[in-house]
Image (cartoon, rainbow, N blue to C red; front, top):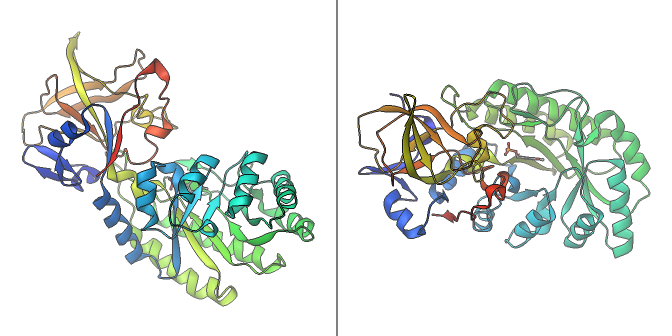
Length: 408
Ligand SMILES: *Cc1c(COP(=O)(O)O)cnc(C)c1O
């Protein structure tokens, strides 16, 4: 049987999966309870050094904190990336607690409240303006505080990126400012007391197709350079977005980074540097940096057969790891890779369904999966839990305790 590529990146110690080099049975004792999330630092480190080796040297790397805002993990990321992208005041606080300077923190997202904008102005982070109304509220906050807000403009492009799991640009959007409206808005803002640094475009996420990502990068560069040329400000910041995907499902092929790195090098050399020799060029990634480094570990509490079908009932569920149940934006429910983490050496297989402990049929974690025969007390490991896991799940649903998260 072929092993999913994201399982293969973890070590195995005897019969156990190892996270951060520690066998799962021992790690579970250390945590003292199930379910829990564990993130492997070494996998994050190697993921980022691989990426750096492929990206051009003068492209900087930003981590989108919403993918995984665990404070210890964000602290770890502070030593590995150049900047952070945050999407709420709480994420901004987490990012400001690290050594990353405020000028290297960008705050994006629709619906930033006036309170959040004031906090961001006071902190000195770069606020990504997402509408004309928001721009006005930033100017007001700056005037009131006597601080010149540092801003960039998020552009909603006039094209779509195909093949993205989630579309966040092109057509009509709540994100960013429509490309054709940008020149007029910047003219309108010319007299305002703003430190305008440049442009941002983020058009979609979870893309596994290198050719599509290459084309999107080319389009983004073309669009942003055109806007930079006519905007009347010296552009110092060019955030090209990202959208690099990870392989969640059986047939998904990992993204081939090499052509993406090559395209980016070409674009930097032939288009960006001639026009903007000193601008900071940014690639902004969330799940690609951390998603595969994390596992969700949950224990089998019951094993039952209903009319010929075997169920493993675990002590976790969609309240902690919604995405694995197929209810976080997926159109067709497919299984996340999962294993019995303490029976790695067992050859026998049976077909079972793994269900969570919530009283809803939606709480399905693995449908008809082929696993070593498991007993009550065994540990089910669900992969791809390092991004959009705990904080993207309805943790209050049914009132179970919050699971611990550890960085190993
Ligand atoms: C969510 C988000 C990201 C990260 O997306 P991933 O798919 O996790 O890489 C990056 N930039 C912005 C503006 C976002 O909203």
